[in-house]
Image: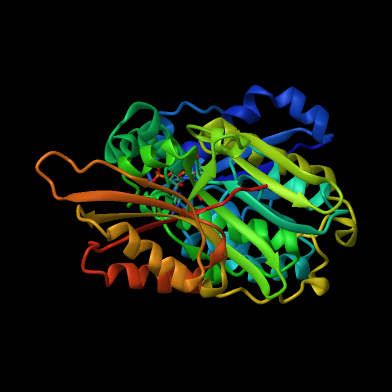
Length: 436
Ligand code: NDP
Ligand code: HSE
C-alpha cells in the first residue's frame, strides 16, 4: 500500500517536534494507523535554519502554497501560527480536497466556523487536538469520551507559559520578565508572548472548549479576558496566607441566562488539584451530569508534547480517510445542524467570590468604613486580613475575601471603596473559585 503523504507548513518548535516523533515512532504509528505516514515536504521562511535541523527525506520549500497544491499530499499539517496566511492555506487545502491538521488555536477560535463549514461541504477532516492544552487529549475526551453528558461547566489552566510564570514567581520568588524569557527560550510562548500573558491564547482555547462542551458555535469575541501581568508577589503571598493559590483560569459555565466565558487570574483553594498544577503543566476539570467531575492533566506546551497531539490527529485522519464523511465525529462534537445559539452572559452578570486588596490610611475607623460599604450592598465578607504598615509608611494593606456575589454589585462596591478618602485607588480585585 502507498504511504499517506503529509505536508508540513512550519518546521518550528511544533513542526520539528512532529517530524521527529513521526520518524522516531514510525513503526508504532503505522501499526496504529494501518498505513505508513510519510512527510513529503515542509514549508518554512528561512531555509538555512530548517536545513540545519538535519531532518532527512523531507523536501524543504519557502512556498507554502506549493505544499497545499501538491496532488500527492493528502494531509496538510498547519504549524505556522498566525491567522491570515494560515487561513488562506487551510481554506485552499480544503478546496483541494485535502484533510487538515492544525495546532493553531487562534485560527480555529477566530475562523473555525467558516473552516468547518468548508470542510463539511468538501467531505474533509480538520483536526485540532494540539490547539488546546498541548499533549492532553482534551478535545477527544470531551468530544467522544463525554458524549453522553450534559456538561454544566469546565475550568482549566490552559496556558503553559502563564502557569510556568505564576509557579516560578510563587515557588522561587522569580521576576516576571525573567521567567517569561525562559518560557520563550523553551519554546512554550506564542510568537507574540502578550497572547500568553494577557490571556488571549487561553481565550482562544476556551472558545474551542466551550464550543465542543456545549454545542455552540465558536465565539471568541464573547470571552471576557484578563491577563496575569498585573499580579504582584504580594498578592501571591497574601493568597497563600489565606489558603489559596493564584492560577490563570479559563472558565466556561452554562447558566439559566446563557453561557459565561471568562479567562482571568483566580484564587483557588490550595487543597484543590487544580491549585497544585505547576510549571508548564495544564489541567482541565470538566463537570458532566453523568460522569461527574473528571480531570485531565499533562504538559500544556513544548515541542514533543504538542507533537503527540498533532500526530494523534494525523493517525485519526489516516484511519478514517476512506470512511463516509457522515460517519465521522463532527468537528465541534455536535452535528453542525444541531449547534445551539446559547447567548453569552455579560460581565456584569458573572457570579464569583472575590479577593480584594487595598491600601488604606493607618487610622481608626477605616475598617468600619470598609465593612459599611459591603454591609450596605449586602455583600458578605468571608475573611479579612489587616497587615502591619511598612516601616516609615502610614498606609496599611487590607485584604478581604467575599462570598459569591454578582459582578455588577461588586463593581459598585469597589467604586464605593475607591471613593472613600481613607482608601487609595485602585482596589485590586481577583476572582475566587472554589471549584467544588
Ligand atoms: P514557531 O515560531 O516555532 O514555528 C513556526 C514555523 O512556521 C517556523 O518554521 C516558520 O518558519 C514557519 N512559518 C511561519 N510563517 C510561514 C510562512 N508564511 N511560510 C512558511 N513557513 C512559515 O511556532 P510554534 O511551532 O511554537 O507554533 C506553531 C503553531 O502551534 C502556532 O499556531 C502555535 O500557537 C501552536 N502551538 C504551539 C505550541 C508550543 O508549545 N510552541 C503548543 C501548542 C500549539 P521560519 O522559522 O523559517 O520563520
Ligand atoms: N503558548 C502556548 C502556551 C502554547 O504556553 O500554553 C500551547 O498552546
